[in-house]
Length: 381
Ligand SMILES: Cc1cc2nc3c(=O)[nH]c(=O)nc-3n(C[C@H](O)[C@H](O)[C@H](O)COP(=O)(O)OP(=O)(O)OC[C@H]3O[C@@H](n4cnc5c(N)ncnc54)[C@H](O)[C@@H]3O)c2cc1C
Image (cartoon, rainbow, N blue to C red):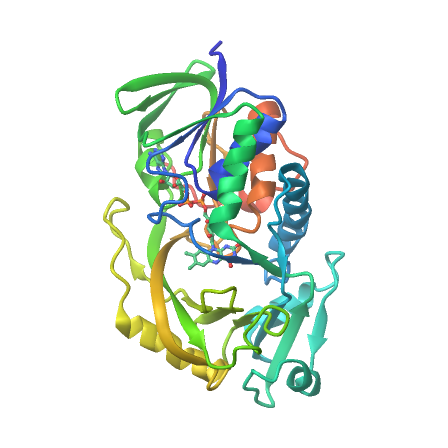
Protein backbone atom coordinates (compact mmCIF):
# COMPACT_ATOMS: atom_id res chain seq x y z
CA UNK A 1 0.00 0.00 0.00
CA UNK A 2 1.62 3.35 -1.01
CA UNK A 3 2.45 5.66 1.90
CA UNK A 4 0.98 8.60 0.03
CA UNK A 5 -2.79 8.51 0.40
CA UNK A 6 -3.90 11.07 -2.18
CA UNK A 7 -2.07 12.83 -4.98
CA UNK A 8 -3.89 15.91 -6.27
CA UNK A 9 -3.05 17.18 -9.75
CA UNK A 10 -3.62 20.92 -10.14
CA UNK A 11 -3.07 23.88 -7.85
CA UNK A 12 -6.06 25.96 -8.99
CA UNK A 13 -8.92 26.59 -6.58
CA UNK A 14 -10.34 23.05 -6.85
CA UNK A 15 -7.05 21.22 -6.31
CA UNK A 16 -6.11 23.58 -3.48
CA UNK A 17 -9.51 23.13 -1.79
CA UNK A 18 -9.22 19.34 -2.13
CA UNK A 19 -5.72 19.25 -0.66
CA UNK A 20 -6.92 21.44 2.21
CA UNK A 21 -9.98 19.26 2.92
CA UNK A 22 -7.90 16.08 2.88
CA UNK A 23 -5.01 17.43 4.97
CA UNK A 24 -7.45 18.87 7.51
CA UNK A 25 -8.90 15.38 7.89
CA UNK A 26 -5.42 14.04 8.57
CA UNK A 27 -4.72 12.45 5.19
CA UNK A 28 -1.23 12.28 3.68
CA UNK A 29 -1.64 14.35 0.55
CA UNK A 30 0.63 15.72 -2.17
CA UNK A 31 -0.47 18.55 -4.47
CA UNK A 32 1.39 18.91 -7.79
CA UNK A 33 1.09 22.12 -9.81
CA UNK A 34 2.82 22.47 -13.17
CA UNK A 35 3.33 26.25 -13.01
CA UNK A 36 3.10 28.35 -9.81
CA UNK A 37 0.25 28.90 -7.37
CA UNK A 38 -1.68 31.90 -8.72
CA UNK A 39 -0.35 31.72 -12.31
CA UNK A 40 -2.36 33.31 -15.13
CA UNK A 41 -2.64 30.33 -17.54
CA UNK A 42 -5.66 28.76 -15.86
CA UNK A 43 -8.99 29.79 -14.35
CA UNK A 44 -8.42 30.68 -10.69
CA UNK A 45 -6.21 33.79 -10.73
CA UNK A 46 -7.18 37.42 -10.39
CA UNK A 47 -8.75 39.92 -8.07
CA UNK A 48 -12.26 38.60 -7.67
CA UNK A 49 -15.02 36.06 -8.30
CA UNK A 50 -18.64 36.53 -7.39
CA UNK A 51 -20.57 34.30 -5.02
CA UNK A 52 -24.35 34.12 -5.01
CA UNK A 53 -26.66 31.19 -4.52
CA UNK A 54 -29.15 32.69 -7.00
CA UNK A 55 -28.79 30.34 -9.96
CA UNK A 56 -30.88 28.86 -12.73
CA UNK A 57 -29.91 25.32 -11.65
CA UNK A 58 -31.31 24.20 -8.32
CA UNK A 59 -28.40 21.90 -7.48
CA UNK A 60 -25.99 24.82 -7.94
CA UNK A 61 -28.02 26.97 -5.57
CA UNK A 62 -27.68 24.28 -2.92
CA UNK A 63 -23.98 23.82 -3.58
CA UNK A 64 -23.24 27.56 -3.37
CA UNK A 65 -25.24 27.91 -0.15
CA UNK A 66 -23.23 25.06 1.40
CA UNK A 67 -20.00 26.54 0.03
CA UNK A 68 -20.66 29.89 1.68
CA UNK A 69 -20.56 28.10 5.05
CA UNK A 70 -17.37 26.30 4.00
CA UNK A 71 -15.68 29.61 3.08
CA UNK A 72 -16.63 30.90 6.53
CA UNK A 73 -15.04 27.83 8.13
CA UNK A 74 -11.88 28.54 6.12
CA UNK A 75 -11.98 32.14 7.34
CA UNK A 76 -12.16 30.93 10.95
CA UNK A 77 -9.41 28.41 10.36
CA UNK A 78 -7.04 30.81 8.64
CA UNK A 79 -7.87 34.10 10.33
CA UNK A 80 -8.23 35.62 6.84
CA UNK A 81 -11.24 37.58 5.65
CA UNK A 82 -12.20 36.06 2.32
CA UNK A 83 -15.91 36.73 1.83
CA UNK A 84 -16.49 40.38 0.98
CA UNK A 85 -20.19 41.07 1.33
CA UNK A 86 -21.38 43.41 -1.44
CA UNK A 87 -24.76 41.97 -2.38
CA UNK A 88 -25.26 40.43 -5.83
CA UNK A 89 -27.93 41.81 -8.15
CA UNK A 90 -29.12 39.70 -11.09
CA UNK A 91 -31.00 41.78 -13.65
CA UNK A 92 -32.45 41.19 -17.07
CA UNK A 93 -35.57 41.14 -19.19
CA UNK A 94 -38.52 39.73 -17.28
CA UNK A 95 -38.75 36.90 -19.83
CA UNK A 96 -35.05 35.98 -19.61
CA UNK A 97 -34.91 32.19 -19.18
CA UNK A 98 -32.02 32.42 -16.68
CA UNK A 99 -33.86 34.93 -14.49
CA UNK A 100 -37.13 32.99 -14.75
CA UNK A 101 -35.42 29.73 -13.77
CA UNK A 102 -33.72 31.42 -10.81
CA UNK A 103 -37.02 32.88 -9.62
CA UNK A 104 -38.63 29.44 -9.88
CA UNK A 105 -36.07 28.05 -7.39
CA UNK A 106 -36.20 30.88 -4.85
CA UNK A 107 -36.95 29.59 -1.41
CA UNK A 108 -35.16 26.31 -2.08
CA UNK A 109 -32.22 27.46 0.01
CA UNK A 110 -32.47 29.18 3.35
CA UNK A 111 -30.89 32.47 2.29
CA UNK A 112 -32.38 35.93 2.02
CA UNK A 113 -33.31 36.94 -1.51
CA UNK A 114 -35.43 39.84 -2.75
CA UNK A 115 -37.21 40.34 -6.06
CA UNK A 116 -36.98 44.03 -6.87
CA UNK A 117 -39.42 45.92 -9.05
CA UNK A 118 -38.63 49.06 -11.01
CA UNK A 119 -39.46 51.52 -8.26
CA UNK A 120 -37.15 49.90 -5.72
CA UNK A 121 -34.41 49.34 -8.25
CA UNK A 122 -34.43 52.99 -9.22
CA UNK A 123 -34.30 54.10 -5.61
CA UNK A 124 -31.57 51.71 -4.49
CA UNK A 125 -29.35 51.46 -7.56
CA UNK A 126 -29.53 54.73 -9.50
CA UNK A 127 -26.51 53.59 -11.58
CA UNK A 128 -28.67 51.19 -13.60
CA UNK A 129 -30.47 51.78 -16.89
CA UNK A 130 -33.92 50.19 -16.61
CA UNK A 131 -36.76 49.47 -18.97
CA UNK A 132 -40.31 48.64 -17.96
CA UNK A 133 -39.42 45.00 -18.67
CA UNK A 134 -36.45 44.87 -16.27
CA UNK A 135 -36.68 42.50 -13.34
CA UNK A 136 -34.08 41.91 -10.63
CA UNK A 137 -33.18 39.41 -7.93
CA UNK A 138 -31.01 40.70 -5.12
CA UNK A 139 -29.08 38.56 -2.68
CA UNK A 140 -27.76 40.75 0.15
CA UNK A 141 -25.43 37.97 1.42
CA UNK A 142 -23.82 37.65 -2.01
CA UNK A 143 -20.45 39.12 -2.65
CA UNK A 144 -16.88 38.78 -3.77
CA UNK A 145 -14.14 36.24 -3.16
CA UNK A 146 -10.62 37.65 -3.69
CA UNK A 147 -9.63 34.85 -6.06
CA UNK A 148 -5.83 34.66 -5.91
CA UNK A 149 -5.84 35.29 -2.16
CA UNK A 150 -8.40 32.49 -1.64
CA UNK A 151 -6.22 30.00 -3.53
CA UNK A 152 -3.11 31.11 -1.64
CA UNK A 153 -4.97 30.73 1.67
CA UNK A 154 -6.22 27.23 0.78
CA UNK A 155 -2.68 26.15 -0.13
CA UNK A 156 -1.22 27.75 2.98
CA UNK A 157 -3.78 26.02 5.22
CA UNK A 158 -3.32 22.68 3.43
CA UNK A 159 0.41 22.98 4.18
CA UNK A 160 -0.32 23.89 7.78
CA UNK A 161 -2.20 20.59 8.15
CA UNK A 162 0.72 18.70 6.68
CA UNK A 163 0.02 18.56 2.93
CA UNK A 164 3.08 18.62 0.68
CA UNK A 165 2.89 21.01 -2.24
CA UNK A 166 5.25 20.97 -5.22
CA UNK A 167 5.14 23.57 -7.97
CA UNK A 168 6.75 23.47 -11.40
CA UNK A 169 5.97 19.75 -11.66
CA UNK A 170 3.96 18.59 -14.67
CA UNK A 171 2.12 15.27 -14.47
CA UNK A 172 2.32 13.49 -17.79
CA UNK A 173 0.39 10.34 -16.96
CA UNK A 174 -1.81 8.78 -14.29
CA UNK A 175 -2.06 5.02 -14.45
CA UNK A 176 -4.17 2.71 -12.27
CA UNK A 177 -1.94 0.06 -10.65
CA UNK A 178 -3.77 -2.52 -8.55
CA UNK A 179 -5.98 -0.57 -6.15
CA UNK A 180 -3.71 2.50 -6.31
CA UNK A 181 -2.17 4.77 -8.93
CA UNK A 182 1.19 5.43 -10.53
CA UNK A 183 1.77 9.05 -11.43
CA UNK A 184 4.57 10.10 -13.79
CA UNK A 185 5.73 13.68 -13.51
CA UNK A 186 8.88 15.21 -14.95
CA UNK A 187 10.91 12.00 -14.69
CA UNK A 188 9.71 11.11 -11.18
CA UNK A 189 7.28 8.31 -10.41
CA UNK A 190 4.87 8.75 -7.51
CA UNK A 191 2.70 6.02 -6.04
CA UNK A 192 -0.50 6.87 -4.23
CA UNK A 193 -3.67 5.16 -3.07
CA UNK A 194 -5.83 7.74 -4.88
CA UNK A 195 -5.38 10.49 -7.46
CA UNK A 196 -7.56 13.55 -7.95
CA UNK A 197 -7.51 15.25 -11.35
CA UNK A 198 -8.31 18.95 -10.81
CA UNK A 199 -6.58 20.15 -13.95
CA UNK A 200 -9.08 22.73 -15.26
CA UNK A 201 -8.55 23.50 -18.95
CA UNK A 202 -5.74 20.89 -19.08
CA UNK A 203 -8.03 18.01 -18.03
CA UNK A 204 -8.33 16.43 -21.51
CA UNK A 205 -4.57 15.96 -21.73
CA UNK A 206 -4.65 13.64 -18.70
CA UNK A 207 -8.06 12.08 -19.33
CA UNK A 208 -7.13 10.90 -22.82
CA UNK A 209 -4.76 8.30 -21.27
CA UNK A 210 -7.55 7.09 -19.02
CA UNK A 211 -10.14 6.33 -21.68
CA UNK A 212 -12.43 9.12 -20.56
CA UNK A 213 -14.02 10.55 -23.67
CA UNK A 214 -15.77 13.78 -22.79
CA UNK A 215 -16.08 16.69 -25.21
CA UNK A 216 -14.47 19.46 -23.21
CA UNK A 217 -13.76 22.79 -24.79
CA UNK A 218 -11.99 25.85 -23.48
CA UNK A 219 -12.39 29.54 -24.17
CA UNK A 220 -10.22 32.43 -23.14
CA UNK A 221 -12.40 35.16 -21.68
CA UNK A 222 -11.37 38.79 -21.37
CA UNK A 223 -11.82 40.90 -18.27
CA UNK A 224 -11.47 44.69 -18.41
CA UNK A 225 -10.93 47.21 -15.61
CA UNK A 226 -12.31 50.72 -16.10
CA UNK A 227 -11.69 53.91 -14.16
CA UNK A 228 -14.97 54.93 -12.57
CA UNK A 229 -16.70 58.16 -13.55
CA UNK A 230 -18.79 58.10 -10.37
CA UNK A 231 -16.25 57.44 -7.63
CA UNK A 232 -18.78 57.01 -4.84
CA UNK A 233 -21.48 55.08 -6.73
CA UNK A 234 -18.92 52.53 -7.92
CA UNK A 235 -17.56 51.75 -4.47
CA UNK A 236 -18.27 48.88 -2.13
CA UNK A 237 -21.46 49.64 -0.23
CA UNK A 238 -22.98 51.52 -3.17
CA UNK A 239 -22.51 49.13 -6.06
CA UNK A 240 -23.26 45.41 -5.63
CA UNK A 241 -21.91 42.82 -8.06
CA UNK A 242 -24.27 43.30 -11.02
CA UNK A 243 -24.96 40.34 -13.31
CA UNK A 244 -26.94 41.57 -16.28
CA UNK A 245 -28.49 38.86 -18.46
CA UNK A 246 -29.51 41.47 -21.01
CA UNK A 247 -32.68 42.39 -22.81
CA UNK A 248 -32.11 40.68 -26.14
CA UNK A 249 -31.82 37.02 -27.13
CA UNK A 250 -28.12 36.20 -27.53
CA UNK A 251 -26.94 38.89 -25.10
CA UNK A 252 -23.88 37.71 -23.20
CA UNK A 253 -24.05 37.81 -19.43
CA UNK A 254 -22.30 40.98 -18.28
CA UNK A 255 -20.76 40.86 -14.81
CA UNK A 256 -19.66 44.09 -13.17
CA UNK A 257 -17.81 44.34 -9.85
CA UNK A 258 -17.55 47.35 -7.55
CA UNK A 259 -14.26 49.21 -7.45
CA UNK A 260 -11.97 47.54 -4.91
CA UNK A 261 -9.18 50.00 -5.66
CA UNK A 262 -8.24 48.74 -9.12
CA UNK A 263 -11.21 50.14 -11.03
CA UNK A 264 -14.56 48.64 -12.00
CA UNK A 265 -14.04 45.08 -13.22
CA UNK A 266 -16.30 44.01 -16.11
CA UNK A 267 -16.64 40.67 -17.94
CA UNK A 268 -18.78 39.52 -20.86
CA UNK A 269 -19.22 35.82 -20.13
CA UNK A 270 -19.16 33.41 -23.05
CA UNK A 271 -17.63 35.93 -25.45
CA UNK A 272 -14.19 34.33 -25.25
CA UNK A 273 -12.05 32.89 -28.02
CA UNK A 274 -11.57 29.11 -28.36
CA UNK A 275 -8.34 27.64 -26.97
CA UNK A 276 -7.22 24.73 -29.17
CA UNK A 277 -4.14 23.74 -27.15
CA UNK A 278 -4.14 24.45 -23.40
CA UNK A 279 -0.36 24.86 -23.49
CA UNK A 280 -0.51 27.79 -25.89
CA UNK A 281 0.33 31.00 -23.97
CA UNK A 282 -2.61 33.27 -23.10
CA UNK A 283 -3.36 35.82 -25.83
CA UNK A 284 -2.68 39.52 -25.37
CA UNK A 285 -6.00 41.16 -24.44
CA UNK A 286 -7.82 42.47 -27.49
CA UNK A 287 -8.63 46.23 -27.49
CA UNK A 288 -11.70 45.50 -29.67
CA UNK A 289 -13.14 43.26 -26.93
CA UNK A 290 -12.50 46.03 -24.37
CA UNK A 291 -14.57 48.27 -26.62
CA UNK A 292 -17.39 45.70 -26.82
CA UNK A 293 -17.34 45.33 -23.03
CA UNK A 294 -17.46 49.14 -22.67
CA UNK A 295 -20.43 49.37 -25.04
CA UNK A 296 -22.36 46.70 -23.20
CA UNK A 297 -21.54 48.30 -19.84
CA UNK A 298 -22.88 51.58 -21.18
CA UNK A 299 -26.23 49.86 -21.81
CA UNK A 300 -26.35 48.52 -18.24
CA UNK A 301 -24.95 51.58 -16.47
CA UNK A 302 -24.80 54.54 -18.85
CA UNK A 303 -21.96 57.01 -18.36
CA UNK A 304 -20.61 54.97 -15.47
CA UNK A 305 -17.08 54.21 -16.62
CA UNK A 306 -14.23 56.21 -18.11
CA UNK A 307 -11.35 54.61 -19.98
CA UNK A 308 -9.96 51.08 -19.76
CA UNK A 309 -7.19 50.83 -17.16
CA UNK A 310 -6.05 47.35 -18.09
CA UNK A 311 -7.37 43.98 -19.23
CA UNK A 312 -6.48 40.36 -18.54
CA UNK A 313 -7.65 36.91 -19.60
CA UNK A 314 -8.93 33.83 -17.84
CA UNK A 315 -10.10 30.42 -19.07
CA UNK A 316 -13.52 28.83 -19.01
CA UNK A 317 -13.69 25.05 -19.41
CA UNK A 318 -17.00 23.95 -20.92
CA UNK A 319 -18.65 20.58 -20.61
CA UNK A 320 -21.28 19.76 -23.27
CA UNK A 321 -24.18 20.59 -20.92
CA UNK A 322 -22.42 23.42 -19.07
CA UNK A 323 -22.52 21.57 -15.77
CA UNK A 324 -19.74 20.28 -13.53
CA UNK A 325 -18.07 16.90 -13.41
CA UNK A 326 -17.42 15.68 -9.86
CA UNK A 327 -17.06 11.93 -9.88
CA UNK A 328 -14.90 8.85 -9.71
CA UNK A 329 -13.49 7.42 -12.93
CA UNK A 330 -16.10 5.08 -14.52
CA UNK A 331 -13.75 2.09 -14.24
CA UNK A 332 -11.10 2.98 -11.65
CA UNK A 333 -12.57 4.28 -8.43
CA UNK A 334 -9.10 5.23 -7.16
CA UNK A 335 -9.13 8.10 -9.68
CA UNK A 336 -11.35 11.12 -9.10
CA UNK A 337 -12.16 13.88 -11.56
CA UNK A 338 -13.40 17.43 -10.96
CA UNK A 339 -14.18 19.93 -13.70
CA UNK A 340 -16.23 22.87 -12.48
CA UNK A 341 -17.19 23.91 -15.99
CA UNK A 342 -19.55 26.75 -15.24
CA UNK A 343 -19.35 30.27 -14.03
CA UNK A 344 -19.90 29.47 -10.34
CA UNK A 345 -16.99 27.02 -10.23
CA UNK A 346 -14.85 29.16 -7.97
CA UNK A 347 -17.47 29.90 -5.35
CA UNK A 348 -18.27 26.22 -4.78
CA UNK A 349 -14.62 25.12 -4.47
CA UNK A 350 -14.47 24.39 -0.71
CA UNK A 351 -17.52 22.13 -0.97
CA UNK A 352 -16.17 20.42 -4.08
CA UNK A 353 -12.96 19.88 -2.11
CA UNK A 354 -14.93 18.27 0.72
CA UNK A 355 -16.85 16.06 -1.72
CA UNK A 356 -13.64 14.89 -3.39
CA UNK A 357 -12.11 14.30 0.00
CA UNK A 358 -15.16 12.15 0.97
CA UNK A 359 -14.90 10.20 -2.27
CA UNK A 360 -11.16 9.67 -1.85
CA UNK A 361 -11.49 8.53 1.75
CA UNK A 362 -14.77 6.60 1.73
CA UNK A 363 -15.75 6.12 -1.92
CA UNK A 364 -19.01 7.95 -1.22
CA UNK A 365 -20.30 11.34 -0.06
CA UNK A 366 -23.41 12.64 1.66
CA UNK A 367 -23.71 15.45 -0.94
CA UNK A 368 -25.97 14.75 -3.88
CA UNK A 369 -23.56 14.49 -6.81
CA UNK A 370 -26.00 12.80 -9.19
CA UNK A 371 -26.15 15.91 -11.45
CA UNK A 372 -22.34 15.92 -11.70
CA UNK A 373 -21.79 12.29 -12.65
CA UNK A 374 -19.52 11.63 -15.61
CA UNK A 375 -21.85 8.98 -17.07
CA UNK A 376 -24.16 11.68 -18.47
CA UNK A 377 -21.33 12.92 -20.74
CA UNK A 378 -18.96 10.02 -21.14
CA UNK A 379 -18.88 8.32 -24.53
CA UNK A 380 -17.86 4.68 -24.38
CA UNK A 381 -15.11 3.73 -26.85
C1 LIG B 1 -13.70 35.39 -16.64
C2 LIG B 1 -14.14 34.38 -15.62
C3 LIG B 1 -15.04 34.75 -14.65
C4 LIG B 1 -15.47 33.84 -13.69
N1 LIG B 1 -16.33 34.26 -12.74
C5 LIG B 1 -16.68 33.43 -11.76
C6 LIG B 1 -17.49 33.88 -10.70
O1 LIG B 1 -17.89 35.05 -10.64
N2 LIG B 1 -17.81 33.01 -9.71
C7 LIG B 1 -17.37 31.72 -9.73
O2 LIG B 1 -17.69 30.99 -8.80
N3 LIG B 1 -16.60 31.25 -10.73
C8 LIG B 1 -16.24 32.07 -11.73
N4 LIG B 1 -15.44 31.63 -12.75
C9 LIG B 1 -15.12 30.17 -12.84
C10 LIG B 1 -14.01 29.76 -11.92
O3 LIG B 1 -12.99 30.74 -11.87
C11 LIG B 1 -13.46 28.40 -12.38
O4 LIG B 1 -14.54 27.49 -12.48
C12 LIG B 1 -12.44 27.84 -11.39
O5 LIG B 1 -11.42 28.78 -11.13
C13 LIG B 1 -11.83 26.56 -11.97
O6 LIG B 1 -10.80 26.13 -11.11
P1 LIG B 1 -9.95 24.82 -11.41
O7 LIG B 1 -9.12 24.58 -10.22
O8 LIG B 1 -10.84 23.72 -11.88
O9 LIG B 1 -9.05 25.17 -12.70
P2 LIG B 1 -7.69 25.97 -12.78
O10 LIG B 1 -7.75 27.19 -11.99
O11 LIG B 1 -7.34 26.11 -14.22
O12 LIG B 1 -6.66 24.99 -12.09
C14 LIG B 1 -6.16 23.84 -12.72
C15 LIG B 1 -4.70 23.76 -12.37
O13 LIG B 1 -4.18 22.49 -12.74
C16 LIG B 1 -2.87 22.68 -13.21
N5 LIG B 1 -2.53 21.53 -14.04
C17 LIG B 1 -3.20 21.13 -15.14
N6 LIG B 1 -2.62 20.04 -15.69
C18 LIG B 1 -1.57 19.74 -14.89
C19 LIG B 1 -0.59 18.73 -14.95
N7 LIG B 1 -0.58 17.83 -15.94
N8 LIG B 1 0.36 18.68 -13.98
C20 LIG B 1 0.36 19.58 -12.97
N9 LIG B 1 -0.56 20.60 -12.88
C21 LIG B 1 -1.51 20.66 -13.83
C22 LIG B 1 -2.95 23.96 -13.99
O14 LIG B 1 -1.69 24.54 -14.21
C23 LIG B 1 -3.86 24.80 -13.12
O15 LIG B 1 -3.15 25.56 -12.20
C24 LIG B 1 -14.98 32.50 -13.72
C25 LIG B 1 -14.05 32.13 -14.68
C26 LIG B 1 -13.63 33.05 -15.63
C27 LIG B 1 -12.65 32.61 -16.66
